[in-house]
Length: 407
Ligand SMILES: *[C@@H]1O[C@H](CO)[C@@H](O)[C@H](O)[C@H]1NC(C)=O
Ligand SMILES: *[C@@H]1O[C@H](CO)[C@@H](O)[C@H](O)[C@H]1NC(C)=O
Ligand SMILES: *[C@@H]1O[C@H](CO)[C@@H](O)[C@H](O)[C@H]1NC(C)=O
Ligand SMILES: *[C@@H]1O[C@H](CO)[C@@H](O)[C@H](O)[C@H]1NC(C)=O
Ligand SMILES: *[C@@H]1O[C@H](CO)[C@@H](O)[C@H](O)[C@H]1NC(C)=O
Image (cartoon, rainbow, N blue to C red; front, side, top):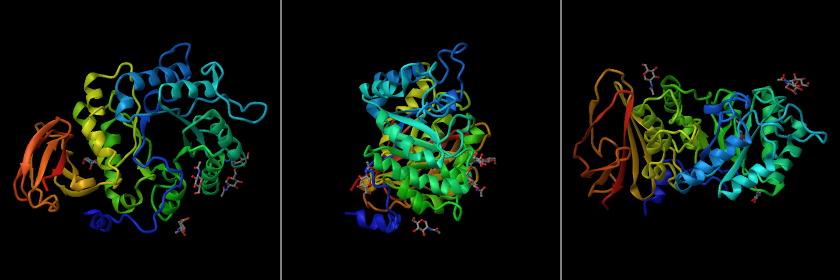
């Protein structure tokens, strides 16, 4: 078997253990309101677009009934702005009573009844980013206990209204407190994003031991400019970031924005292809009630999800840059690969690109590989090591290939 050489080649990895809660052996998938719904709390004016139990239930219904859940999109998460302005008389976090009249426990039960999981949000500091009560160091144990009592399955812990020493004490402490509840709760840490995302300020060995996923970089916005900056940053810093990801511990380049307003069809394909290469969490953040058929087709692509969820959990790398093209490659189980060819140009027409298995560094089967176009859902053919693989890539677009060994 090729497993051993693969492990050596990709540094899979003496010394890098992951948080021992058994969770997220493949990147998590689900839905989160933030990118699309932000901190809209005006349910009087906008009852369908505000952060409320009504919105969360509606999205849970869509995940359960529109084919998302079967593909693996199983988490329904809250983000900022679910809380009341004050903790309750016992000092416990509580939901805004008007927008969440049934309370979080009932909402979690509803989500579970749909066969889904529930994620909640807090902040390792005095206040959340939008000014709701945060989890201060002295509140960590209580908040973890309350989340566990509610039946929460994931916690995202943000980092506003805080400082480096509070974060350095707080994130490990919350990890231990979640463990102590006895309930498996996946832990998403925003910590590195607040420290610039890179060593020496960020210790990824430690993060891998206490968190299941972490945001490394700034928030995604609904634009190509934002998406492009994120892709560039993960490529430029891959020597640091690529080795630290693996089963149970993922880099998180942030939410999927396909299905919203800012990306073209081709640009939406770029995001999902790169997120599959990067072994990134796949969190939708669009309105699932009004999502277009085109966006749904991209986000529900089974082969794309298969690549994203590969059990080896090896994050891919940018292996070449040539003019306006970038080539990204991710090794998968059983001599399979994902390869994304990104055209970062904006000049008019689709541009021809040619490569071969040899140029891609894929020699592990003398008989060659079957090659599929993932997003077009087509089979391109069987290719020997030196056969030319040629296609055109649209401006600010991608061709995403899946390669399956003929050996
Ligand atoms: C808590 O940590 C221990 C030791 O690392 C582990 O065996 C156990 O599964 C963890 N429990 C939870 C609920 O995460
Ligand atoms: C958090 O609150 C404490 C106590 O009121 C205060 O000393 C500290 O400056 C605050 N930190 C931030 C970052 O706002
Ligand atoms: C960080 O915040 C904590 C708690 O609010 C405070 O006690 C501490 O002095 C702050 N540290 C620095 C370096 O500002
Ligand atoms: C990073 O964290 C690990 C695990 O806690 C620790 O062993 C190591 O010394 C830390 N590295 C640095 C540079 O602080
Ligand atoms: C694409 O090119 C633009 C303009 O040169 C640049 O700002 C951006 O970072 C590039 N994107 C990627 C993913 O390299």
